[in-house]
Amino acid sequence: LQLVESGGGLVQPGGSLRLSCAVSGFFLGSYAVGWFRQAPGKEREGVSCIRGVDDSTYYADSVKGRFTISRDKAKNTVYLQMNSLKPEDAAVYYCAADLADSVCDASVNSLAPYNYWGQGTQVTVSS
Image (cartoon, rainbow, N blue to C red; front, side):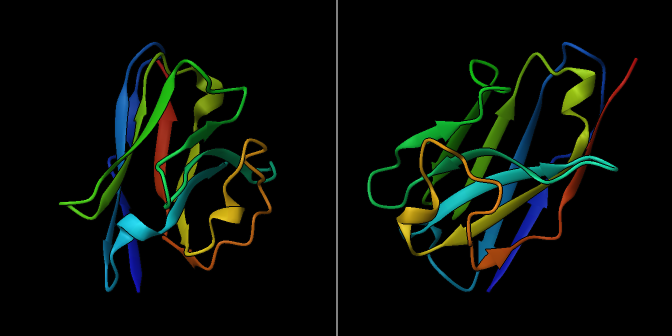
C-alpha cells in the first residue's frame, strides 16, 4: 500500500498550491485520509481530513477558509487545495490513510493513529 504526495513547491505569500495524495494498492474511496504538516523544529500539525463513509471534511482553525480537502474516487486521489498561503504554512506536508473513520474528526488530531503514510512534499511560502 503506497501513498504518494505531489504538488509541493515554492509559492509567494497569497498564492495557491494544490497537493495530491495518490494511492496504489487499495481503493482510497473507502478510507479516511488526513493531511498533516511539519515545519523544522515544530511538532506535526493536523491540517485537514476527509472521512471515508460520507466524505465529511474537517479543518484545523489555522487553515479554515483557505484550504479545501477533496476526493476524486475515479483517480484514487485526495487533494488539498491551499489558497491565500502564508509564510507560516511552509512545511513538509504528508497525507495519511486509514480504514477507521474514527481517526478523522473535528479535532484534526495531529496524533491520530493513521496506518498508512506518504513520504511528504515540501511547501515553501516566500517572496
